[in-house]
Image (cartoon, rainbow, N blue to C red):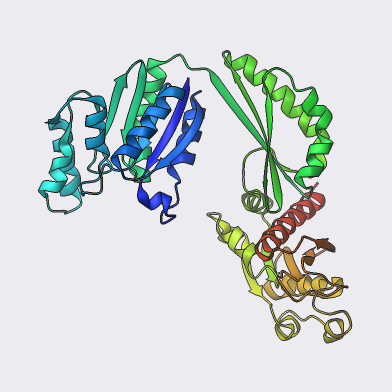
Length: 415
């Protein structure tokens, strides 16, 4: 079964609101065996919506729409759909009671605009909305399903999980779609492609391999569609095992999980603590670590030691090291890691010092050169990297590389 997603709203087209609905919907549909062939975003204009539906109907069996169902004048989706599918507006008593209950529970006055959202086309199946005031609408035309939902993410997700996905499973004999993602670090996408050329040439059946690069990591996604769940899983597991044997040196995780979460879970399971001393990454590693719920269980503290004075007075880096080798050096970054370990009294530490750019580089120390150190009570590791000339990318690459170095040290010491 093929589907298309249409998101409606001027706010999406001008960049005022990030379109997260499409990504969530695509993942949810794939999860029940429905492939997405296209994602389209259109403005709050009648003809734009009609054109998008017409085109989607040429490609897909299921068309999902979000946005434009609010009570204000700029929300025109419902009236456009009446024009497109025919029918007339009628009051839906169930929707009306649900709207009243929703408004009362939040102490909101019941206005005519809100209550008017209980008016729905008489030729659609009404989708209940327990999370807002705009019910969804499910139309059927020429053998295709057309579903319209609010653009508010939590309302859309509630409708999908509570009503739409279960109904789609009941109505259609859907195939199995399996995705497996392997996260790698420390090898560029082009090098991975060369390493996996022979593997790709011998991929079995309909298995597809995709490369998903981001600063510091490359995700390898294997995808397979089949009719028999057990056979599909056996084939996928076989291909995953083959792939892992080739790239094992660079594998961070065999699930689509962020590196900061992987490292955090490792620290927590081992009962270890972490401290950070960042210069060129400017607190990015601390941000990544603390973006994971529960990180207070293992992150003790962090310091952004941007100036040499802070490196020396707070972290205890030797003045001679700073004067003789400069802040961006193995000697200094080792000192920073050891200093953080002592300052915060932790089991592990990470330190970074480099030239993020866009200026400040020299022939000996170009933009993108970063020294990273990870330390424990037993040892201090340090390594130099050359990341490039883009500041934001350098900061992310350095942060990801540092996290992976820590992961390796923990694994080495606890093997």
